[in-house]
Image 1 (cartoon, rainbow, N blue to C red):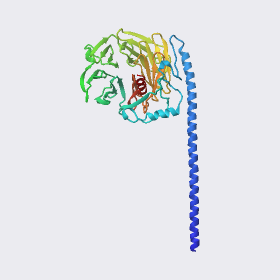
Image 2 (cartoon, rainbow, N blue to C red):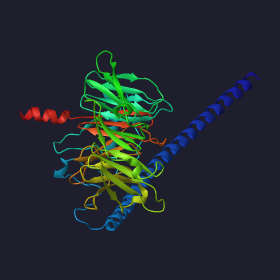
Image 3 (cartoon, helix red, strand yellow):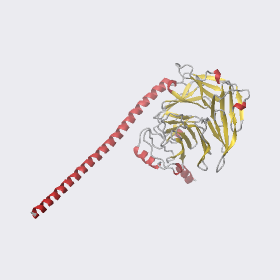
Length: 455
């Protein structure tokens, strides 16, 4: 009986071992099948994305050709699509419309550490392009920092970028200043009931414009202090009305009353009365100003809903108004901005139209974004900057319409529908998104080393 019991135990152990080996073999086979399925799914996904990109690019090129044909062959009209190779007019910058997974993955691995040591997570691959490469043989490294975090329900209403620093204003009255020399963000004003309409700084003083007045701060370290301000209603004692609209470009603020207009230089504290009256253009529900460049005012007229959009370009000093009609693709147009002495730029989906309203002809039709354009920067008459909903920022040449540089803002969302803001100055860019304000800076270490080597 003892021998039989031992033999039974040995058989049970052997059966258990065989069962364990069988289970491990089955688990190994299942893992191998799962890994193979994942690899097949990944290859199929990449193949599908490449095929989708190719078909999307073909459809987009066909649509752009149709739009260019509809715009007509007027004098000076040009159309520009994707660039597929280097050009001398663009200093060697290249925009690649197709995906390059290996270069893109290596590039975004270098971008995980953001500006001033703040870590940035890798963004999505939607709208991804290869990093720009210049004719000097080096890649421009772009650093990005989330400079200011937005409070819930308090979106950014105004931004300003200069060589010495930047300013940010919000819809609930917050004013913040960042000096590039100290890399410190300082809150100049806390929450209030008035939204910030415009900002300006000359490096020594900071100015914030609200509906009927502006405030001033003396910039100093470690802490700035308030240095007064002025009310717009006190500039003209005969005027008893409140300001209807306030627009600002640099130090010049345009204050529109129903029966008067005043242009104020906030830093010099001087003002000039203009004979222009916005009430002559229509009622408050029909007309509204959309941009001001220091001398001229762009006004949208919606008095005829069934007709295409009509714009009026009013020169405040001469009190002259030019009516602009028959804009190409005006039914889907948005983000109207004055550009240079005689042009108007606006977005149509993922394209940009530059229209010469004096010659009544289309100057540029710029295409290079995949998502809808959410912000434009037309302050520099030599270039244009555009920002799309997927976080891609393009800088365009004003003379040729070529794309000079393509950047990407990581971790930036544009889903809440707020008015977004963009400003590009030199090698810096300031972007307002749902998360807050991002500061991008392009370093040219490779170029500096190349120049030093030549010396």
